[in-house]
Image 1 (spheres, helix red, strand yellow):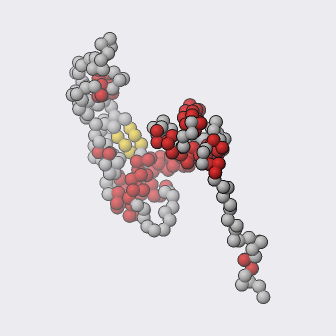
Image 2 (spheres, one colour; image 1 turned 180 degrees about the vertical axis):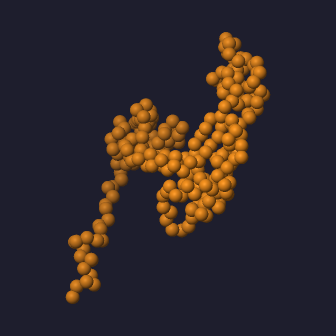
Image 3 (tube, rainbow, N blue to C red; image 1 turned 60 degrees about the vertical axis):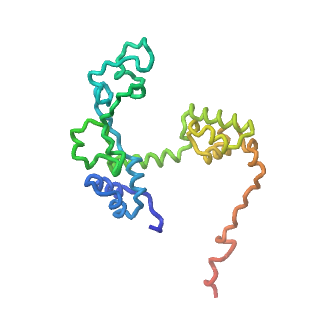
Length: 234
């Protein structure tokens, strides 16, 4: 396991699909792939397919059918029954009992090997090697194409970072305060600032202007060094 692990390939994903269908432990699947069990679990969770269940009025509560509760949210003018309301009656109702099957929260995190999968009407997750491989390829493509934020998200990031930096706040403090609002990492923020994507520039960063430009190490190979001729001349 000390050697470098290559990227997950289609054959590896087929092994995972067969393994979860046979209800093999993730540890056994990881041994077959010569990978860490966490890598297999992460692959399944990242690329599993979600299939929503079929519930009465879209409500998974055990008592949804025949429920007559109203105005749980405090809105007395609402004519709807609470179990049909889009405000999610589960938040307000003390008698909410979910009928969802949550076996997919535990290994192997999918329903491929479940005996009840064909007639099950609950939320389900499935792992398909072809779909997973296609998703992985699409993810690699999109990750290499410029900015992966929408115009609205980029505008929000620009506003939060620019306002904070102009007030003299370091990026670490801005990300600590607005962690839930910023959909990028601090490393990506530095790249955006360096590329001129945001309103602020490197000169606006307090410590950035004090750093000296790093010198590139001189290459030890090439025509100028002539090292390739050592031991090959008379």
